[in-house]
Image 1 (cartoon, one colour):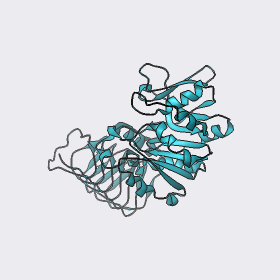
Image 2: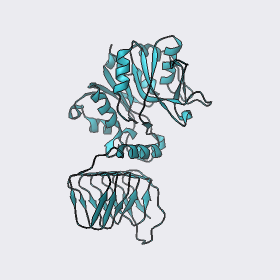
Image 3: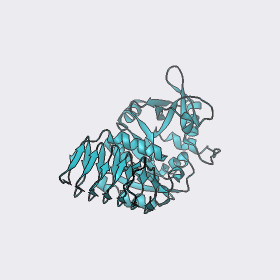
Length: 357
């Protein structure tokens, strides 16, 4: 079995962060989203992996993953360029997949507990496809599946305008080679894309075996800032504390906290977990790092007050104003001169931003 990770798309809902790189490289708990997908594939024994590249700085994906050897896998890059739909991307992988069954994993998805259950269900069946499903509160945002009374898939619809089901099609699909023949029959949808839900629905309507697998843990599509922050919280909930840095006197650290190598926590600083702090950081003095915060490598925070946020590598914050529920891009600088703390600022900053508040 082979794997396919999709790392294309425009990521318009995540601008300005996606002006400077693919959304799949945005870190969650200090690990790029795409790496969660790759590790899930590797953990079920899939080590021959294709990666679909888009046209938003694809070289950054190649630079990060390389040939896959440092992660114990082999990576083959497949260029899609302009995003024309998931089914289009899958169709481009036919030569790479050859005759083998395969797993498709959207590179901006995170699934608690990995894909072992899905792969096991697929291996035990003679189905042409196994589709991961998850109950959601807002099915109009996703492709959804309708099941009959026996739990079999009877239809699939992409982003339905009317309620059909609350079972969203998660971004993980398992296919036999027959899917390529179906994709060749598709025409662009109203979004001008080849829809994978239509391809799977054609399998269903032609009486092919398409099985549903309802995931029991959480699943998140990280397509919006609020989704990324929620996944960051969920992942940090499972953090195991560690300290590879140095904690000076007059420091308070409570809860689950991970501190990277060569990172220093300086005087009169409070860290309340779950929090993860990367390598080579300087935190404090007079700083508060609140729950559900991730701080990347090489960050410098003085007089900071941050909570429920993602601070990416190389950021400098010298700001006495509270920052909450924020995504702060790589290399940003945030400063202030005022002494009074307001209720809090919510920021979404692209790389190398400079903000005075």
